[in-house]
Length: 258
Image (cartoon, rainbow, N blue to C red; front, side):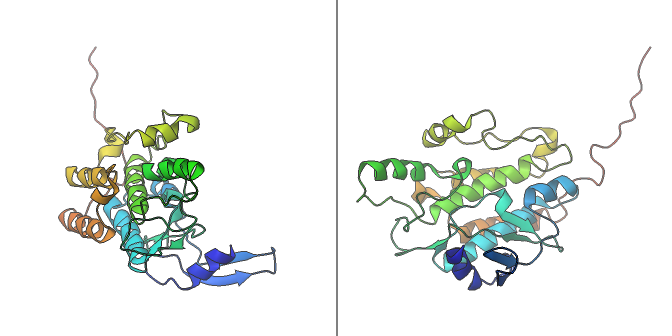
């Protein structure tokens, strides 16, 4: 937590959860931040039916782009680490694995990033790097900001899959056991496009194409966060009023025959 506090105190952006300081009066060591009334994005989408999903994704991407411009990797991006304030603004939180990139011009992982993250959101090269590190501790894994971009694509899938009052409870690779999810990702398997009526609303072809590029097996082929921000902003301008109906599904006037 000490490392997290050190990084967090220097971060200041509208899409980063505000950090207030450290408290030791109740527990041995606690980090204090602004209370986020919308909770994490999963809970928020379950409670709010008329949410603009692209707006939430843009906020998360802007927060991530801010970190990358500081040469910082979040290293554990997932939906529960994106919280929503009282104004409906998406903010990144949980900087336990956040670390500074030693040389941004090289595609190398900073110390500690290889073991960071949560399996279902981790880029395939992270798993490969773990295997390589076990075989040769001197080898340096080939990636940096791209691991966050991959995870952002997974978050984009989550936002569209968990988007309505018909919350399905499905998680990433929900048909795959925890034991097999590593092989699934390393083999290059990507999530399928949500096709349920309640999930596909707002998931345009442009957004789906962007998500596909964030999952590029070639880490150098993934878009930079500034490009993701630009594309989501353009999408938001095209669909400014996107959101689910206040009541969904709407009642249908169905006449039954005898």
